[in-house]
Image (cartoon, rainbow, N blue to C red; front, side, top):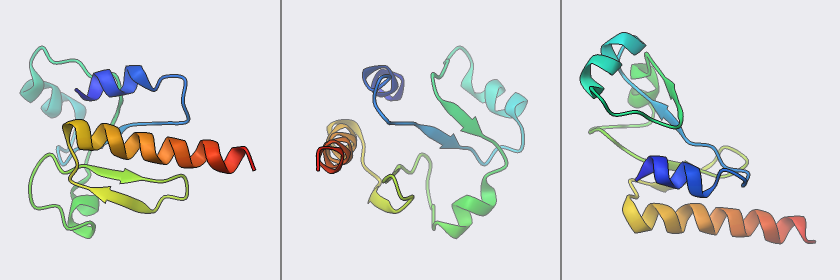
Length: 96
């Protein structure tokens, strides 16, 4: 689903970044197997997870253009709706 979201918004001002608590990419890839991702992953993110109160994986955060967390733990259609809402807000601001 996340790869599809990235592809749908490839021409929009949108980025998806995964913050992994694995210490390195090799450890992460061993656990992923054949799954390939189309988005950036940051490794060694345990301090971020602790600071943001992450208790389970994956936990989804959707941030706006200022870096403010606007949605937490949204998945599937709710994630699509959150991204669409923020992109619509950007379009509205740009038209003013």
